[in-house]
Image 1 (spheres, rainbow, N blue to C red):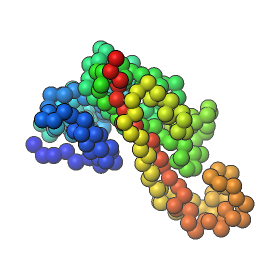
Image 2 (cartoon, rainbow, N blue to C red):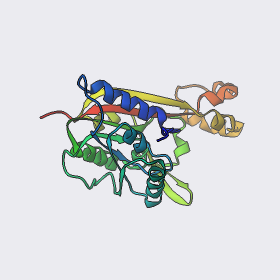
Image 3 (cartoon, rainbow, N blue to C red):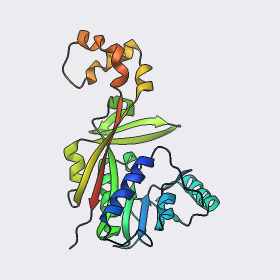
Image 4 (tube, rainbow, N blue to C red):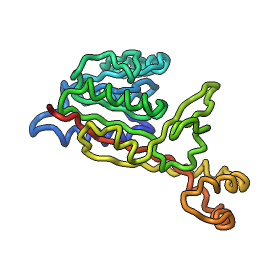
Length: 247
């Protein structure tokens, strides 16, 4: 069996596996432990990596077409994984079913209330002491207007592929509140500098973005920074490694 090589989410999977391995008692392995991937559809599913570690791998996704891609990949690779069409806000599993839960780049399309509901569902299906990896878009991203119209605080809407799509961003206090009922093992922020996006920004667009400047400055000062604009456009994701408390 060839090892699965991921692309955009490789770092997140590898980091979570490291956290899981470090948490194991001496002499124990991940073999036979169960994990649920919330948002597991796609051409190269991360759940395949978990399966190759000997884990009982399960994945859900709300998009049947993307689930078909995951099933096809695992079948072609000889990887055993179970996939179900389901909504992470209403997981079709009993309480305390899984040892681990993984979520990456899926909750970002939910509104604030639905994000909280999804995290509560992940907590419900986790065994006491189980670990989860999850994340949200951070309001440290810039400019937030790239995500469309802000209809409610932190909730942005734009049209992608002919469909209206939601992106929700959280400040630190709001994202910490989402996992207030968990034990936070660590919190990280991944910063991606969108250089190509910045380089494509016209002088006129840069001028309009002065209204979203992170720090107070005059328009002249802002315009003087145009040559360095590529370093300002960023995507920031806040990641949490959390444990469901025992008792």
